[in-house]
Length: 584
Image (cartoon, rainbow, N blue to C red):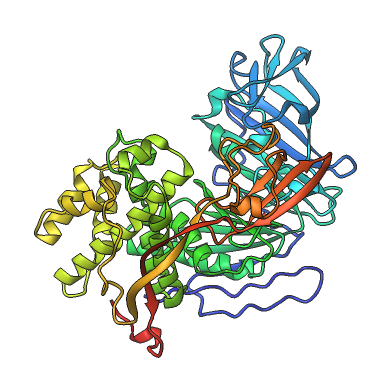
């Protein structure tokens, strides 16, 4: 099966730039920055908002660089009396006003450890609550923070958890929503959000989805794709080194391909959002949500294998982790070997099959996983203990184990079946079973399926790779004749101080600063006060950027978080053999 992309063009006030294309597999539409297409959400159709429901208007105040929020809430009076901005800061909320059918309502603002800022009305409202307030935007230097509120003459970028005041009872309830992103005062009229492209949208969402969503306005590039499984859209704010049009086209067609491979079309349209900012190269963040996939990337970021695999993994997780789930009682962290690791394996395999990553990038991904296990202090910690830790460092180890374990299982299945089938074939059957029962499959379903296909117990392999983490080496011929196995010294990720205990803006001084470590060598002092930190945990090859306060002035310190080195397995691409002649 050939994977194809679309040729798109984007008008930005000058001539449209052409994008190299492959033959289209789905019809596509083109759009231009600053001229959004009229778009409606899946729940539109002229039906009035039901209770509970809400109308949201987001607009910029370019003069003050604040975000102006106006929300009309429908629901029971008791649940509308207390509202929260989940990750809000009380110092950034200004000019809060509220009214109901009886008139003005007095608002009390408070900051709580849970659910951020609370807006409490002095009495139970009668009828809809009409609420308005302003949220102070972060300084430009903080614009790279994914959750920052950013407003300037060219753009407005907001995150729901920083700006939307909603009743906690809405979190797990589907509410009818109307969204209007106002762009008056900005230099362009483009708009998009996690729910689609356009200034005015209508849809149904959970309250927690509204708060997790991203909202963009201004110089926003846009594109739409009409494919068999739905109407995908893309939008981007700012430009990285790669062309977001081609990336979005590849992702939209990849979503079609995954549905075909796993035997079930994804019925929920996806909005692909790219936000480019001044983060270090390699320090990208991909956030999958029910209706969108958001990528924060640096302006210098290329569309390389690591980013492609991360974005493709977010697509695969719409099946593995959303449709296919093992064990209804399992906590999410316990299933990361499947939902993170096996999903990343599927993304890598399909991208390589369709020619969207090279074999060199394929090998680099394998080596990244091996290096993580080689250099992580948690590499030998049992899975149950990693789950109890529940932090990003533990999650990275679980995902790496899952992706490498899936590689071994796939090889064993192919060896038994004459090179055919493999793990993708088994995953297809499991997905189809999950679709049929419309529920999580029992934990035993995975082992039972592999035992049947392999003709031998599969649990020992699972225990070594996942449960106990004692296995960290692949069979030397597993990648075929185009790779040769050897050894390499991998650097350990070491920020040089205690990143978890040194809280920006709170902690006095730098805690756990290692003398002679990478941070100290870069000039960080124990007496500095950490203001902001940008880094990609677990990646010694991605630059750390610290902003610290010293003697009343802010300083920026940059360095690679490289610690001790560890020797472990690595694969090298054999020169002289074309990718087309490499078969595992």
